Length: 99
View 1 (spheres, rainbow, N blue to C red):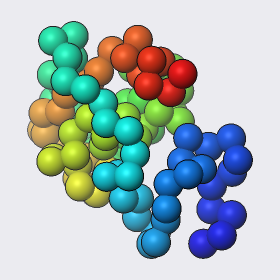
View 2 (view 1 turned 120 degrees about the vertical axis):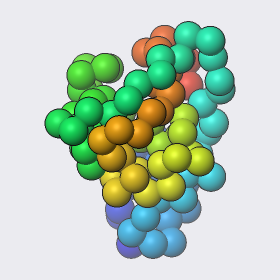
View 3 (view 1 turned 90 degrees about the horizontal axis):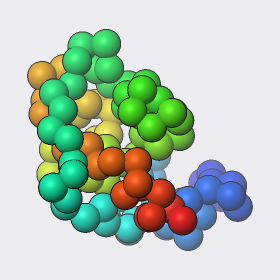
View 4 (view 1 turned 60 degrees about the vertical axis):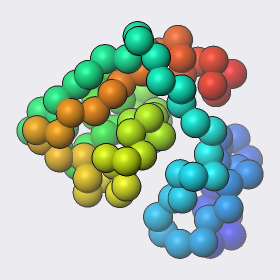
């Protein structure tokens, strides 16, 4: 899968051994009392990119939900189902992580 990530990607140093991303190699998103508890609506089922756009103004931040909820979102797309309650960090937390 050489070339899977561009040089500008936040994943450029993450090893990729399969089509699925091993989120254990990426930075952790710390727990915060500022996190929102959000129950995924049906319009966002299997579409974390759409919720990322709604919450953060960018579809590229879909991975935040998987990193913040690794016990619930093992597969960040298939496990992103309506009715599941996840923690969503505020944008300020994400900005500190991605610099």
